Image (cartoon, rainbow, N blue to C red; front, side):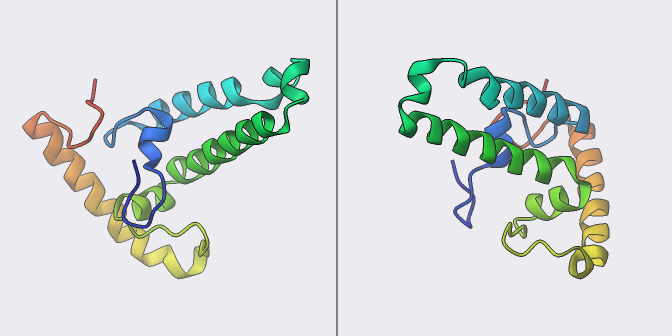
Length: 126
């Protein structure tokens, strides 16, 4: 699943919902990072001898690291949730004031979701 900019749906990569807490995102990231870490699969000789498999695993770990970086940073996450995040244009100075506004809006939306008792995502909240 991809967003409007052709990027993968970051919450889906980690297997969490849009209303997941920072702790849930951190746990999901760590679990996947450990699962796809090169130390786990480079011990198997036949995987080392097949470069296409090891490259795809490296690519998956790179994607998990990017997703973890974006969703664990409140400012980047606010931009991503507003569909304004661009991984190629990640300059801190330009987005400082705007992300404060987005974070405030996100907290208001999350409060409203809690009152209604639902989460608008493809993965249900628990």
